[in-house]
Amino acid sequence: MKLSDSARESRFYNEDFAPVPLEERTWNTWNYTSIWIGMAVCVPTYMLASSMIQEGMSWWQAVFTILLGNLIVLVPLLLNGFPGAKYGIPFPVLIRSSFGMQGSILAGLLRGLVGCGWFGIQSWIGGNAIYQLILVVAPQMGNSAYLGDFIGLNIAQLICFFIFWGINIWIIHKGIETVRIFESWSAPLLLIAGLGLMIWAISSAGSFSDILAQTASFHPEPGSTFGTIFWPSLTAIVGFWATLSLNIPDFTRYAISQKAHYTGQALGLPTTMTLFSFIGIFVTSATILIFGEAIWDPIILLSKFDSSVVIILSMVLLSIATLSTNIAANVVASANDIANIAPKRISFKMGGYITGVIGILIFPWKLLADPSGYIFLWLIAYSALLGAITGIMICDFFVIRKRSLDLESLYNINTTLPEWNHKAWIAFGFSILPVLPGFLIQVGLLNAESIGSFWNNLYSYAWFITFGIAFLLYWILSGKK
Image (cartoon, rainbow, N blue to C red; front, side):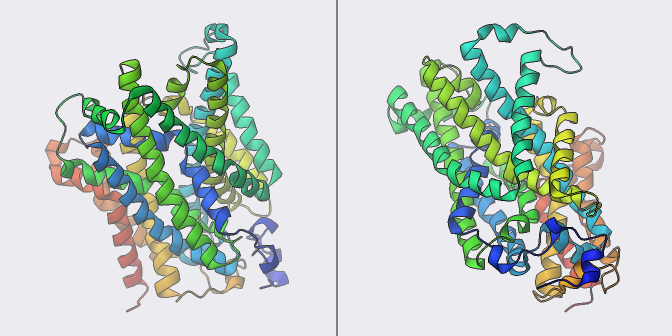
């Protein structure tokens, strides 16, 4: 559909946000499969099961929880991907229909700022891989000048961080088509690298069953029952891709058909997440037999190889894996969400540059200092916010609007959409109230004993609670039956 001149002149329009014409929608099933392989094969996925196993799960319980969580989050991914493919519009434009023209800016930033945080985390992981690579050929770089406790890094570490950061920014500068091409050719390499780690583990440590038997030693003390850690773990897994379940229209707007992104996502996400998480468990188990200790961090593991050629090749592949995740999962969404603040002034590329700056300012190496806090506090906390937004978006498009949008109204302030959809924000606000006490307990601002364990336990279900309440309240407030 071609927009009117008034819509194109609106302050809510720029060329990056315009509906993608049918003849320019070229992404096929393999593109969506590969983009999910590229995003899922990363260090956080490799380490994802570690916290669950250390809390008391068996290896197969952790793998099952990861598979189930990804099957659950696949549903909103496919649902929110539908309007993107139908109308060729990105997430910041789609969300205007549910949160209002101005309200969509704030709602989008809730997702965009999370992406900035993830961008910083992944940039640090990629930079650290480069640092370990340099230490192979120049070990003396490990003794470079320390920059003080405020920075918390030496000069070589900081330079490596900025090298990887700069590669990300360069790809964004080249545009979205470069992202598609990069993901398509990197996906097979990443799968081969993961399977190569498994082959190395078996050849170095023994039989399949002997290796997995070592997972019993991951528990530092008698673990909790499966039931007590299942729900917070499942919520964390859903939270892992809760961001993409919102901004998936940023990618499906380029789909050649609905079937292309449905099939590609279903093939790419749950299978890759489950397989690569299992590889993380399996290889870590093997490290107990090979090195006498459990090494969860693949960067540390790869640095222990005797062959410099193997270390260099492995670190290059690890950098590619981190880069493919960072660009697709974090920068694209954040760039669009920041551009939505003032589309006439901020382009997609400028939004990407701003994302990069924020990713530096959060000091991601300090955010990752506590892995358990990163998984269970960080993931669950923002999943609560994003669950509410997801519930409202899905209700608005599929229930209230019956899968039909007026494109003109999404760009032109003089049409039927309000600046702020108060019904959406009321539903959003009330949906997060039940999980707020649990969050305050987690960050130490409330005492669990003073208000009861019920609220703390409720926090474990954060995404599911906020999604359900927001969906129902928005439906009721919109007067639909």
